[in-house]
Image 1 (cartoon, one colour):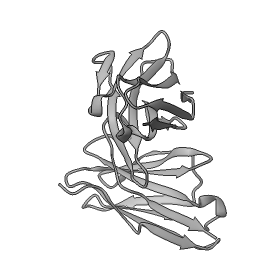
Image 2: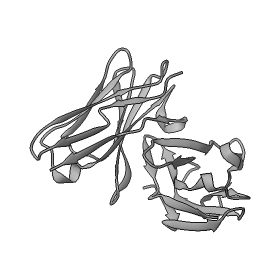
Image 3: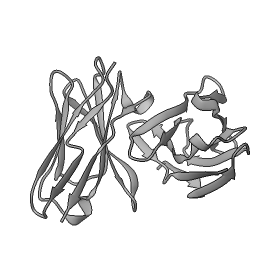
Image 4: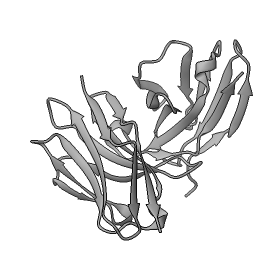
Length: 114
Length: 111
């Protein structure tokens, strides 16, 4: 079974731009969660989608948004990029509720904001 | 409010020595607890999880963790370290609709 895939793996943007990251979960998994990982703040939960609905949301500004499609693939969008948005963005999938079950993580998208 | 604290951002052990990575949580009710490992340039991989079925949880790669309610701890151990155990380890706690990760502990294994 293929693992979680994230595209692109690396991305460079400038301040003020917007970016869209993509995540394909493991086949059959209905939950997709997104995390931001930075040296200073560590791993922080962004949000979880389950069956196309946002189920949980972390403490991030509205510039961070996401969606999930009927095939469970998910996208995360960040608008009006700031330097502090530079991070590794991890996507994880789970058969059911992410917060109570094993999550399978992708390799991440490394976003650099200049 | 709940939080999770990992004591020691860096731990160094010799190959064959005991590995002990510490995790404490703050919660008024028993949480769900997880240990994940992250190898360089990779995502996280679940080592083990506690869901109140048993206080001693055995995971992959010879790791185990013991839930101690009185100490609000969930420390990760492995009797004998291997070079391949060098990685970053994260403790995570779920309560309700929130999930928090510890700051991580980087484990170095010396030959």
